[in-house]
Image (cartoon, rainbow, N blue to C red; front, side):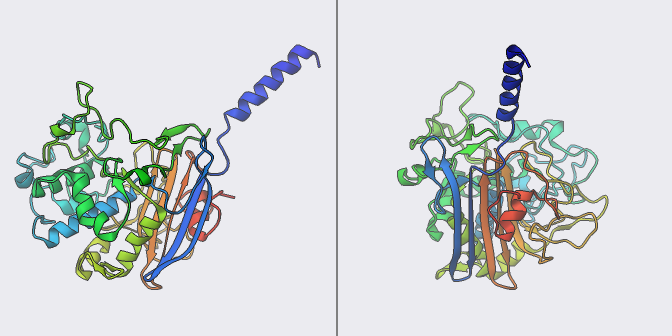
Length: 408
């Protein structure tokens, strides 16, 4: 073999090697718990590759769609305070008409939004609304609506719905969404967490988990120990003056659909709250009835009544991933041949939520019968391989079962 050919072949092999996604997560954390506290912690890998900082169970990470479950807890607190009604027409609260253009006579309610049955899609966007923008501009776009299905008749996972939930929460209270969630949920539970970093303290910021692509290049939260210059989308003129915020105008601002920064241990406390029927460590946050309303199934898969997959590009779900859903709460292990919603592989009907975005996979699941649960996440795993026995990825199956999350 001549030298130029050998050099060319070597260069091709090196390029192919560099383009191969990492086989293992950059970081993975798994916390098991029961009603009384944390049982076990397994943390491996790096929270920050450049700094060489090892990940720990109290390091905050952008937990993706598990944020929705935490938002629903805040909603139920406002329902208990008679500030929100799950079944009221939201148009009256928002002050503008929230209607499916093909079905204008059917009210859109919080119950429909929280259970992904409002007839919405993510095709018109949901996360790029500028600081001075108005969420109504997204909802006016015909692409925001499923033209073939009336509200209440079809399950279609839509992140847009939770930006409208946040708008309703702001309109009902006059409080900015991130501050409201801190008051209603995070502070009473003693959890160091925040939406979009705005309210996290410096010590929490210093422990941020960086999110990576498959080549270990940062995608989100590469903070270097510093608060971002702007924690939200900048305004249409490029500034980041939060005094422009107006209640209910732009519920997407602090990313209620996925922007919660919380640790695995913090998630475990949320799980313990649910196991305790609304009480944890002597703090009563919700009534048992409210917890039951969250977990009660609003939709169960049958052919033709919904999509069992998330259509967002950041999701790593596969068909059969969603088969039972309550109010921002999944139920696993649905006994249907089209369903693959059992990453644990044991047939137990756990409740909770999964998350997937920016190379992160996450899960919070509780088994109410045994009084136990697990919270986990893995970073740097976009395009993770499919699982052996479910519609979840192999990494999620491994973390659910107690493995390292390598997918091996």
